[in-house]
Amino acid sequence: MRRLVSVLGLLGLGSLAVGCGSDDQSSERPSVVVTTSILGAVVTDVVGDAADVIVLVPNGTDPHDWEPSAKDVEAIGRADLVVSNGLDLEEKLVEALESAEANGVRVFHATDHIEPLAPTEDDHGHSHDDGDPHFWTDPLAMAAVVEAFGAELSNLGIEVDDRVTRVVTDLKDVDGVITQLLSSLPDDRRVLVTGHDSLGYFAEHYGFTLLGSIIPGFTSAADVNAGDLAELKEAIATTGATVIFSELGTPTDVAEALASETGTRVVELATHLVPADGLYRSFLLNLASDIVAALSATS
Amino acid sequence: MGPLIDPFVDNDFMLRALLAGALVSIACAIVGTYVVLRGMSFIGDALAHGVLPGVAGALLLGWPTMLGAAVGAGVMIGGVGVVTRRSRLSSDAAIGLLFVGLLALGIVVISSSDSITTSVEAILFGEFLGVSDGDLWTLGIAVLVVGAIAVWSARPFLLLCFDPDLASVMGYRAGRYHQLMLALVAGTIVVAFQTVGSLLVFGMLLAPAGVGSLLARRVGVMMLWASVAGVLSTYVGLLLSYHYGWAAGATVVLVSVVLFFVTLIATSLVPRRPG
Image (cartoon, rainbow over all chains, first blue to last red; front, side, top):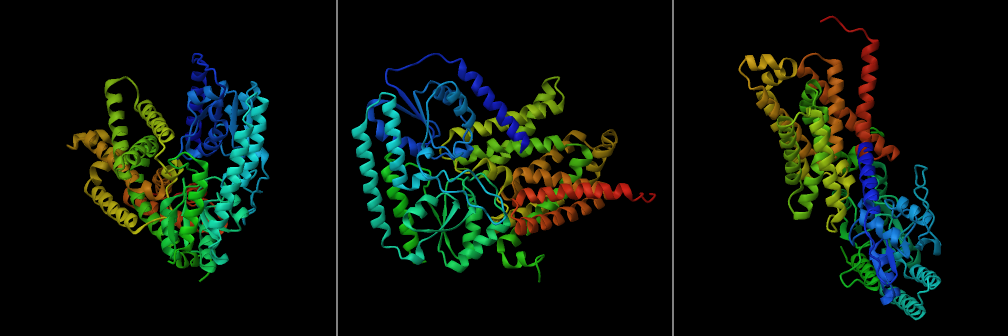
């Protein structure tokens, strides 16, 4: 692994060096660079035609497995505003973002504007991260971020107050629709088993219990261990959970093995993927309706 | 029955991991002994990483990942052959060149594709706790094939390890058997990477075979010890992963390496019997 890391480091350095040599290509509109596709969908909605939005991590790629290209680092360096998720979601961009910030690029960290869910202390006594980065599974947390983002834009001289108001109203509306959608689900079915700990905000906001994850932790990067898997199996057996939600980066064979051993089914859930229409609203509605459909099905 | 047995009785995934680990251990004991004796560790390491772009390409095209891994391994072995024949680079430079090239290609492919959902970690470290029936059958057949080839070419392999010149004198084509040995290493990695991960196969090729080389002089006995060391490491590693929540695949490899050093210390303290 260390060899892999050092090779990756070399590749990263190479891309930085190339990034400096490219020629200037400034357009008239300010450029807003967003790290992830879900944030990108929201930012596009907010800025409209007032700025060019560039999303770095391709939609559907695990941010953990993604490497920035020279072009990406260049885009960050030239951006009028960079929007990042924060809380270590963009682990491969931390240094590029820090050096851009040091060079005077404005960086808006979305999770600075929410109450982050605390990291969980696991049974073996080590805590995982600084906090849960997956705030986008809660529309109201996103609404708070959008308001702060609107203020940041107006600092830059981009006035989109009416769009901010519309997006926030829309998010509150989606929240109501989802609450309505979930109301059919009885309490004893509001139990979530996921690939990694990605639905914390969703569970907190809509009253679900997070039973556990195949990879306990906020990143899909860690390796599976037998002790946690056995505990999860035990927990599934005692609560009678019926579904294991697998996500981007979930080890599929392990999920299948656990499902066949516990008599549950594996259901794919798009927790990190913007749907084809490119709308965050659709992402939320799909997420909620997929969860309801999976959990209310009689196995 | 207590904490040493119960985890395997109560949990199907533990039992399957143990079985898969045992099968990988046996295949790796046979192949790994030759790797250690003939000094082919670096090409083994390179093969373990070299399958990455093949697997990534296979995922992209919707091919079976094992086929992609085989193509990656083939490119690695073929490329090393071409570079050493056509240039003045030594074989370790050739291996290093292809190693880093293929690894980089794998990362580029995975980074720029939005349709690959398997993580790099899953390829390198496998899904040890998600072993299916199909995986067990594949591994079982692989052990039989590896065992048959090893028995069939026992004599030329032995000569290749200890006295390559004598092998030629006795009418064996050293080059051809060297290629066969490489193919065995590659085949073991290709078959086992999906279950235990390509890096873990590499660990299991080296450490238990190292234990075998410390405990025995005859190749057959070395392989036997290596199998025992591999199976023991799998069992202890899985138990540690179960009771302490350590990453499964990495713990198994860690145990096998620790076992090597314990054996090394023990054999240096105990004077060797003559003969």
